[in-house]
Length: 400
Image 1 (cartoon, rainbow, N blue to C red):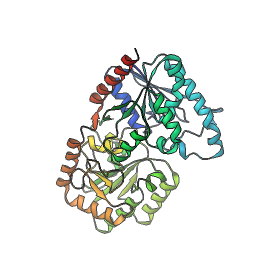
Image 2: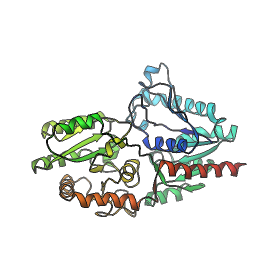
Image 3: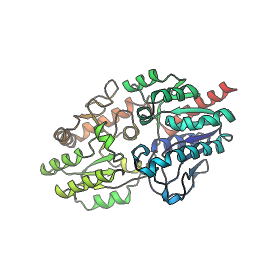
Image 4: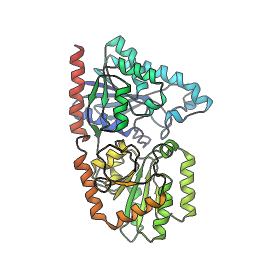
């Protein structure tokens, strides 16, 4: 089977970025189960226009503006919807045009187009009409918030299938009611490719210590939306770290992620102000976060059923979730398979972190519970690829 993935974000081993790792997990899953995969995604400075992951996965990064040096709409670590300069807004129609043309270029080869975000599904519709290629859509949330409802309803009506992989979340149920489509219920795929070897940058930091510190790993894009809407403790974790240091706790916080420079500078400023250089390290973007996850004791950065949460879950790592944010009505339970903290409350976060450090075995069990209880919603690449390809084959057969 030939699968064409259309996406605004996809990791690059050349640039060592991990944007769109959840899309990468799906591509790996399809390839591991015998499919040939091509990925269409916008180009950005520092990466080649063609990148071969393995013999079954090829990434095509298309140029959408000239000269190439002026392409600024797509930047690693930053969502396209955050680019608000005049030049970036000017480039939007060019990106859409060349995205659609590049999909057309590969559509005759593909049996199925897996469109990530509703916009790429819209741009793939000409290929469906011309070549009859089936389109499966995965909406990702930001597209539902930012694109007019009437347009999203039209897109859902025109694609061959929409994938329901976000579990029993209230917003997901509302999403399916608001946008009628042929929904296929599938689990979320997580490709856990941990090497078993601690990355050198993490090793160098930890080897300076004479103790065995409790390792807290924050994963996520530095994005004001995540702080404002998802209440993620990007900044509050630094304030909580100060409390932990004053309490004499033995710990180290690693941040994996990049994005808004103002957030990064704010974190670095607090590291200086609170004298946290021996306790907090910003590692930047990483392509393979699994290599870091395997060595942490606690994860932060996920919300309910998003990619970061799934990465921690499948690795049996306990994680902190924000109370009342996207986890109400879900299988997540405080003290059983996760640790809930109050939103925008650095003191509560610090208190929970201190409890976690003093109850390591109990907390390990919380991570194990999460893995065991969430396996109906989260699967590895081998299992997930088989399930997705089976449904894609049904789409093809239905068309014939």
